[in-house]
Image (cartoon, rainbow, N blue to C red; front, side, top):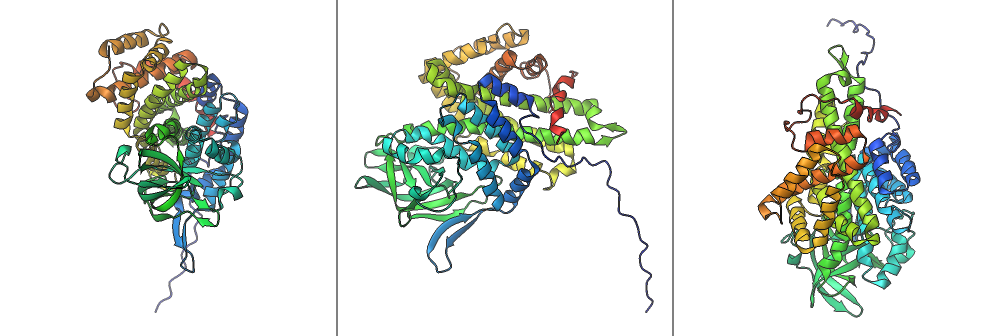
Length: 546
């Protein structure tokens, strides 16, 4: 048998025309839109600058990738067959949780300093750019404080640990912890968003209660406690269910973890209460009113997180085109690519400006009824609008990278899978639109505050003024239900334009108004004719720097 000669040696293939690794990216310093919006909202910049540096490090992105690839897994029993009902996470998850808790993600709004909710909102926006799954337990921990205020005793026991800067994931009773997180278990199979259909039962047991029932979704099942709803003898009531009790775990059975499209680093469970001990929050029969004080704050986060996803996608696309050539020219220098990137940048500029404005209204709610009313309707408008933008915008950014954007080595697939989540969580678009109509019908001050915010930019731009008049003529009273989405979209765009006209650079505000309000344009990104894109793209330039 003939012996074949060894293959001829060859030099390694030279890799050319591929962008360099991004390395460390300062998420605060590289984002002028965020810094400007945070300054307008009165957020303290020192903790945000520190958080942006920490979260932008390459090792944090690596932790996020690991946490999403090694998904949480359920350990129902120990080696001896004893019930555990515990979820195990990748070390990257714990790294992210530790970093965000230490930065004050869940604590800043409740520590008494100015601009706490705006600072928290900015942290949500930055965290979502790196790894959005770990935002879930932190968001619920942040949002639980108003609901806990319904019980002085529970607030005194839980709030100090909820604002602790120490991450303590150990499965132990509250008294043995250095820090705590809270989750939420509301959804049942038969009800979904219709919380009044809740079937879980609550029976009195001395000063406590015992809950029996099934919850179809339990967010962050390794939290130290859950806010939940159950039917008490006097009606639907809110309860706090501790995860662990002195001497053992509370009888909360984790039946399975959901196999989700995205948000894969974070566990979502299907659970059963088997006479689980619970503590009453608020009045009996007043459960929905009590839990909605929490939902208002979680909805703020579901407006900012998709803005962060969009910013991350935009940064990846811009980094690619700034370092990639085609047809003898850098992609960033080609007019059609510039139009696409500028259009995507306007989506992000508007989303972060609107999100931080409504976060500022949450901060200022105690200063006057008008800001409190604006916060109620503004959060809903921001949640609706930003979530409707996220998925198509991220898809466009993925297309910029071509095949490289479609493979799992890129963060774009994770961002795209995550994009629908916040539009579903805490109320789908229809639920949010119906809430907007109810707010306008029941709270005249909300309509007045919204109108005042829109008219605050009157006179700054002729097209804006014309669209404002058209909006008032189209809806002189309460919109009908069939028009609710149209109303929400148009109102959110006007509100965003108002914020930009009063605070953003002229080039940003004018481009937003010209391309979003009454303009003749196509529906695809970049399909708006000839516009100067330089000023918009210049604001992305720092995102390519280490």
